[in-house]
Length: 270
Image 1 (cartoon, one colour):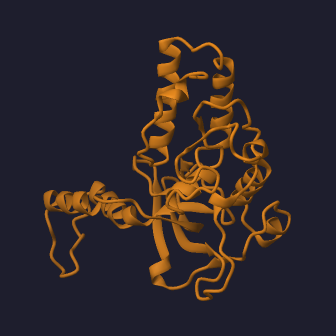
Image 2 (cartoon, rainbow, N blue to C red):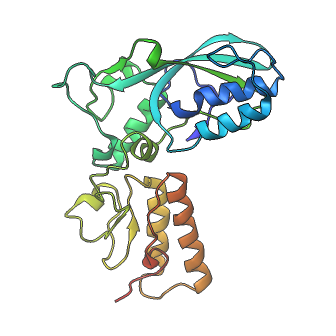
């Protein structure tokens, strides 16, 4: 996923990830950067910037909280775009019997690619042609589901993201749930009972291959090629360390704290 900027806003039909925990603090930070002396607390008290810095630091502590959203332009100028972001969910949140959808249950590369294409243009017509049976995408109402996000040319941080992939949804919306690896982030590519074949991830046993669903199809294919190349003869220490670092970085990018098994950078270890 990539931060939404003034240049990369994809339009009203794209599904985005919104970090609701930082929307408010980020907006206050933007106002402070403009030296806005009219910022006041709920009690009407004007606080010094130093105190706001402490408040914002405390507000940003803890785990990020993401939701799916669509964004529309409220106003635009040469150096600022104001977006109204409205939360969306698959299915009817008021109907407990409505079908649930989980990206962590997608069962093949084709379904992953199809769903990722839908995320970029999430309309009823595109859903009808999708490889995945999706419940209706519901626009939630009320002020608690509506957020204002300001894009400008100076803010370095972001709270809104596009170019979403399935691992982004699994890690940030679905708490890491994955039907393929059961949350371990790795599979034995020869022992999945046919699941690996649906992702073109099948190869010999005895190695830890990153999960194609929750870590990513493309990353899994790169890792698979590395393991196949070094299956019978271990790579050099430098090559193994480089691959292990790539896996660590990918897991950190997705917000996972899983330890990286030594075999992700090695060939067959029996």
